[in-house]
Image 1 (cartoon, one colour):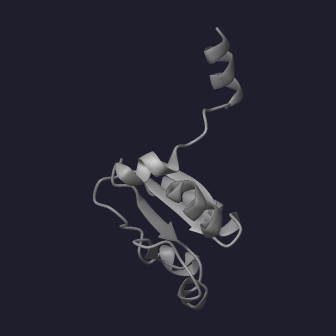
Image 2: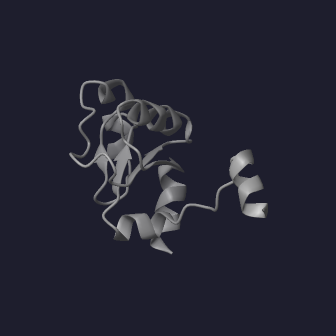
Length: 106
């Protein structure tokens, strides 16, 4: 009953980003190339948000876990929405790249 109520309200358990990465999750950093060069998560793909439309083929598997990140979480939220509109089903907004880095490194 409580789980059904949570589902109706859109309350979900927190995402385990570290586990998603262990399962082959793809981290897509949507900051500019200059921002990315200033620091990033090792192994992440840098596809600036304004270029994402030209490069929506992040993975051939539309069910593969994808984690978006940026400087604050705003652009990564837009990227998540865009990727979902392109049929990706397992997309997560990781927020800022530095916070995401801390979550997957601990």
